Length: 312
Image (cartoon, rainbow, N blue to C red; front, side):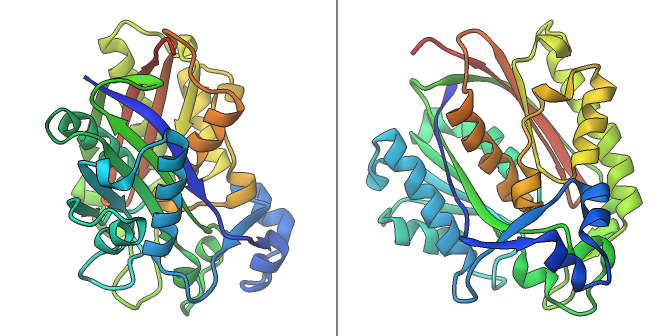
């Protein structure tokens, strides 16, 4: 048994409108909003690293939880945009937070990394103690690479989100999770070293719109929960049209799907936890009420995680 104790986040100050982003590829802001729901995104300063973003979100989470970095049993950092092949950002992020000696693990996964991290942390916390899961991405460095593609450059932003998983008490109990991978589609969303990102948008949307609802349904059916009974759905913020399609497939009002993609764009593995942090402050868990986390990303990797709010 493991619990979600707290969330944290960090977002850069610089706002990049869809009008500005669209100008890079000959698209107007209306087109960008229609295909993605994105009106603006945040870009970090050139000198900021993924580890910098991760450490800031991690410290925000720990401060809200009233926990010192030295009390952690592990730090996990999910990111597909680390500046080098090794070491990854986890060790630097842990050092920047003051978690010297705490084991730090990288999950080099785009978009679904935070979800996989939460699932693994929920199983390891009983053995290791509190685990800080962070998703951090600096997509601005990637979308600036030539050639800039119309369907890629306008979608992404920078940011970091964090979640503290504990073995004893918290705001919500982690009930279960379901994860999946299908390497048949591994070439449909790739980022080679020092190259521009390549994405088969049709394949990504098609597979995501099938696999996300299927994973959510299989998890809820296991516990006899119907989709409309879920308090909130916290998804990877990839595309507003995709989120709406998942809601429609599950027969759930789109209002139950928390969304902040309009403000931040797609921040890959950071997005789900940034959304969770905002949702937690605006609404939050309710005792006994189920909440679903879900994501889909490069690989293709996907899954869902079920939690239930507990008494304070």
